[in-house]
Length: 153
Image: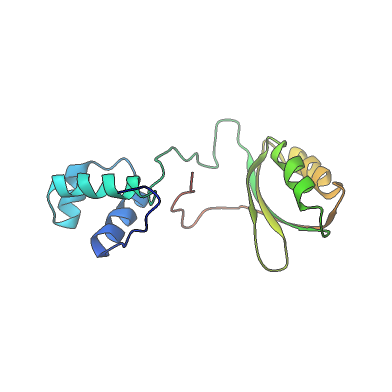
């Protein structure tokens, strides 16, 4: 079956995905026990979900308390018409921009930033705000994470 075909998820698929979002390193035997199915069934379902790109990867998520500390922030960015392509190019070149999403609503983009210090974050925000085409930014600094089901690769 080609990787681009559609796939229908049943309740077991959804439960399997939920368990993996909690702990992607969980053993197949433990997953099978939680789901009440055979290990071979878990393996075949994982293979199917990967083949259909429902699961696109497994990775390590770093906590905010890295060695040396750091701050994380989300920045809503409103841009002038026809300047989006240049803004995306500039933001892509900034190493502290961890993720950039086009969004609907008040802002055109939301950027997830990581900086080593409040001073570095301040400089980064000044840099973003001074880009040609940026009309407005609004920043929210992450204080703590209450629920984290992971990031897409």
